[in-house]
Length: 292
Image (cartoon, rainbow, N blue to C red; front, side, top):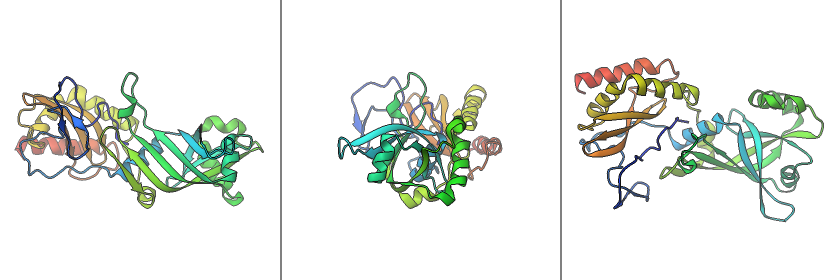
C-alpha cells in the first residue's frame, strides 16, 4: 500500500469549469490531469497493479467490517467489526465466538465479504483513501490447521492473547472468490482472486514510506523539482511534493505556471527494502542532472 498524503490526480485551489477525464470517467477541474508534462511520448512510469495494491492494503491493517447473510432478519446483509490476520495467500482469518451473530450466520450460509480500509489522516476525505472488498465463503478452520492459524492470528492481534484459547471461540477463513479494489477517486477495478493471491504486499508500506516522504519533502525538495522537470517532462515545475512511494517509484504533486498536477516517476528497477530507496533515488537525481 503506497502511503498517500494527497490523493493522486488531485490538487487544491483550481476552480470550475470542469472537463472530462477519459481514463476515469470523473469530471476533473482543469489543470488536475495526470502528469501534465510536455513530452506526450514519454512511456508511463511503472506502478503497482491493483492486485498488488489490494494485497498491500489488506496486509497493512488488521480490522475490517465482516458481512454475512443474516439468519434474522433472514437474507439481509449483516455487518460487524472483526479483527483478522491473513495467510500466505492473503485470505483473512477471523477469530469469533459461537455466540456472535456472524458465526451463526456463516454456519448456515458461508457467503460473506470483508472490507478493509486504508488509514487516513484526521481531517482528510475518507473517500479518497483506498479500500478493498474481499468476497467469498467463510469456512471454519479444520482442527489440524488450528495451531498454525492460532499463531498467525495471535501475531497480528496480540491483544487477543487473553481469550485465544477460550473453548467457545473458533477460527474461520474467508476463501476469496472475488476482489474489488478502490484506490480513491477514479482508481478502481475488479481483481482476479488468483492475481490477488499471487501478489506481494509492498515492502515500503507503512512506516518506511512515511519516513521516506517526510525526508524527501523536508530535505530534497529541489531534487524533486529537478526530477519532475527532466524525468517527468514538467518543464515549468516550480515546486514538487512527494505524496506516495512504493517499490516501483513514487508520486509527486507538481506546481508551476501551467497549474498543479500529479506526476508518476519510476525507479530504474524495483526496490526490495526501504534501504534500497536511497541509492535508487540518487540514480534518478544523477540522471536528471545529466538531462535524461
